[in-house]
Length: 243
Length: 128
Image (cartoon, rainbow over all chains, first blue to last red; front, side, top):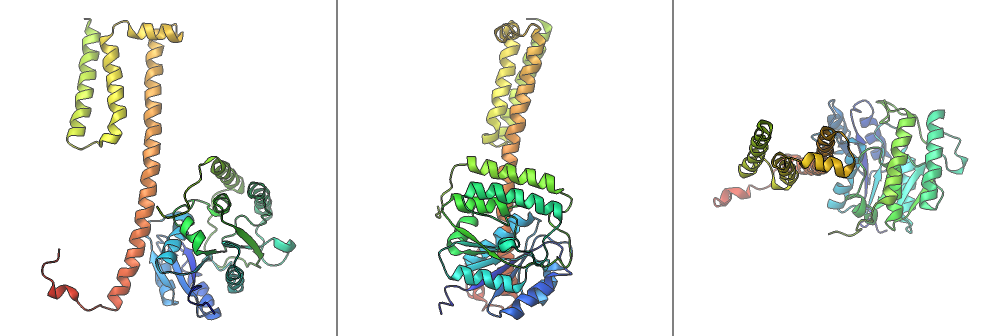
């Protein structure tokens, strides 16, 4: 087994999730002890970092809140620095089951693709937690638009359960959107010659905390994301290599 | 020279002098001062050139010359505000990178505190 090459880091961004983060970390570690779990404490004001550390995670505490994009990107930087061959992004609110993480890692290891996305809606996915109807409408519109731009079917553009190989980490550690980054990141990946693939994952309802979309109505979120996608298509391509 | 011209001239000179002094004392970085110097020069030009505003208004087709003055001022403010937005965006990127780097370094440091490395510094008084 090429275990060394594919050491896996599970990156869990967490902002004020003291109630749920320990459970997520313990569950991941119990499911697959070989995974290293890294919690990015995104400037939380509660005991997120402490709870995560007690549960056995490595913790990087950011001194200011950067938002989900900046937090996840910190995880990418960490994974590269420590030489992990695979990094999985997984929410700290318990939505993403360890089986999903394992499936993503397995798919990535098979090769041929740089990013694997866990999708709630693939294969007509009717099981598990599927978000509210208005959000689902927004998500499917977004999926349609993003799918057209990428020239491939996208079913769950906002999914925050993703696995990355080194090639995509190298690129995204330098170019990652800051707010609501998931759809835009897929477009970035596609435009820069990297590939992504979705696999069906059953998700659960969040255990604690509030959605990172809290306060934003789906409509505002949609407009913002659509705008950022449209703008991205107008941007010049960035170099995929260091320097 | 009319009184208003003298006041405008003094005002522009004072403005330009203030900018140059700020650059000299490094209160303002050169890269951000170019726009300010440019606008200072424009003010100076119009306080020296008596019929300037009317001429300019005539070219553009503005009947009421003072309206041209407001137009110029608003445009100047627009350009400056936009310039600030660009600078702010760049600063935000810098801050993001710094916060990430500090977080990563802090995580390393905390690990070192738990497993204290041999104190190499003792035998190396020349350091620092």
